[in-house]
Length: 109
Image (cartoon, rainbow, N blue to C red):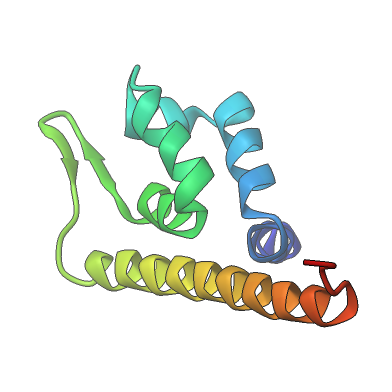
């Protein structure tokens, strides 16, 4: 059982969007957390996959509604930090790639 948990954690670290799509298709937890909502989880998959994974793991599903209490917010914060780190890396790589490409392919203007 611990091996399955490690495989899920590894999959979430390597390909969080794939894990979220598989959870959307196969997991009962998805419907408990999101209900019939489609827009918010879809935006989570596209923009903030780590935060969406952390929310799905941390939220307490009760008959009164979904709640986050105490230490659960730390997991949401960790997801936000991972998403910010990922997006900052994307923008840094884009800038570096543009500068490198500009130095190789000089325009004839």
